[in-house]
Image (cartoon, rainbow, N blue to C red; front, side, top):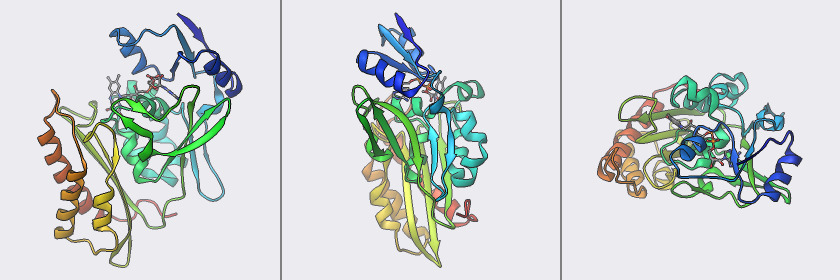
Length: 287
Ligand SMILES: Cc1cc2nc3c(=O)[nH]c(=O)nc-3n(C[C@H](O)[C@H](O)[C@H](O)COP(=O)(O)OP(=O)(O)OC[C@H]3O[C@@H](n4cnc5c(N)ncnc54)[C@H](O)[C@@H]3O)c2cc1C
């Protein structure tokens, strides 16, 4: 097996163009597990470890947050810039696996792997993030909700690398929450994970975004529930209707960890809990 370790983006794109079948390695937490299980046997591995540009966390003057693909869960959990722009992302990173995994696993690797029960996607959908995909030929941005195409399948095309996560300025006074249901504890992938961002103008819901992990072959944006909630006054009856719409939009896996029926029941109850919790919560980030 050949191991290539580029030291900048130019070398990285060259390596990926030269070896179209190469596997990219970020933290290696999922890639190496798949290789050990014999699911993958790459002839060439291109490591992202030496590419310093992928490690940056920045905030621009207009409040846009950018997170390099090689930033680990642990850094996102603790970083003051992330906490100031989108505390939901720090809260979510703290719910991922164990500290050992959080120290090595990256958000770029997590998203590229495309695991439906991973934690970051729902929260990135809730904050309206876009992903930057770059190749030797240029770059493009994809909203997180459009990035996941099927089980363990993303929109990354041959020659492309996920380089940055871009989070727009968040609405003033928004409130956020991430809730995760697992079989045993936080160290597991989510049976269902739900992230919500809500803003109230007076009594009415003026902005709502909901991301759901683990309840379909891909993470998804609960657009139907959002439409039910937008412009309305929070109430138990409204939350009940929104939760039903969210469950109807999901098409869960039926596997050893949970039946499809159980996952749908969890979507329904967890979303109601999130909405109740958020309606009673103070703003989590004031832009
Ligand atoms: C025991 C265990 C428990 C876990 N629990 C959780 C959990 O509770 N919640 C959760 O969200 N996650 C969990 N994970 C996943 C983990 O957090 C990592 O996010 C995940 O393993 C992938 O990150 P990585 O950096 O290790 O990527 P890698 O394993 O290096 O790569 C994963 C895949 O993405 C590709 N890739 C990586 N980076 C890029 C890039 N920038 N551009 C294009 N392709 C790329 C690789 O080629 C590979 O196919 C768990 C993992 C383990 C091993």
